[in-house]
Length: 425
Image 1 (tube, rainbow, N blue to C red):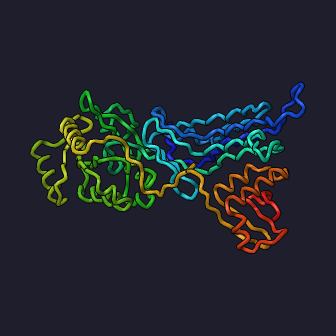
Image 2: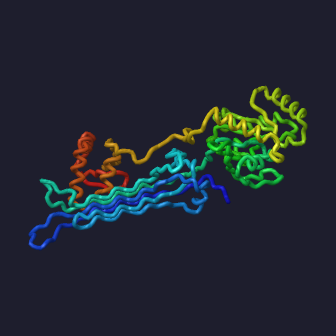
């Protein structure tokens, strides 16, 4: 199966339904009152984390996700049907960003649900506007448009431990021996072109999730080889198992190549807990292994745990499992930690009453969350609807601000960025 870990798509929430304009027509009632119902709200686009999905492959050819629109209100104050929400399943560890690389949400928890694009609110029908001074309103609101976003989905695997090392160090073989994973294994570099996940059962009550990160090489942090595509998957982990081929001509150099790439990519990766594992050790005696380990430890000039193993024969795998269990006990993983490196923006906050006014010749462009919303719901071809909008401009203090800016009779007041949404002063 192909591993897709970054895609660009468009999400479109449903538009709100228009409010309805109608009057009662009843037998023996000379003048029936307004009875137009409100429009239904547009459907939201909602992302939900699913344990049954582990790549973004479903989005490879599905570049647009659209929720349904709300329906128009009806007579007798009948409320229009709300648009159906679109529930989109995504793998755990999916980061949603906009096309300016601003993070919207980091989906780390199983069954987590987040609204990515909010549906537009339905417009009010004319029955909504009845008051002591407006007993027969002859206008209704339009539904608001739903949010439309160009977004980037990026998957960062969530695991307890990352298996790292140069190509052909034996990571895939080790993963297959430690867990239930069945990765492709062959005797040539870059056999593994996609990360593999496996679960190691420590006892009846606990387990660890291990990710086999495809072979890194010198220059990976700058994009060489498989590069950054897979370095990012280590960021979610709590610790690493650094696998080195014991037959290497220079163990220290091999170790430092990978450590340098981790540090160059992210200081966070360089601080992760580590176990160093010398693989393919089945051909050495116990005394020979002790000498190799002691010399390697001395050359490294640190006290990181070094374990000689053989993923092929099973040598010292129990010792490695015990060390993994001890490392898990030192820092239990309760739940994945959300990515904090990208700046976070939030959608669907409560509307802000503030507004801004920009002038271009005799046109005053008024923008702000609340007034934009009123503009979207106004029928600019209906004089009664325009009269209501002028009342709103007065109550919001916008007309006072325009007077301070020396607005003159006949000048244009544009609401929002749509040039067709305007009234004359």
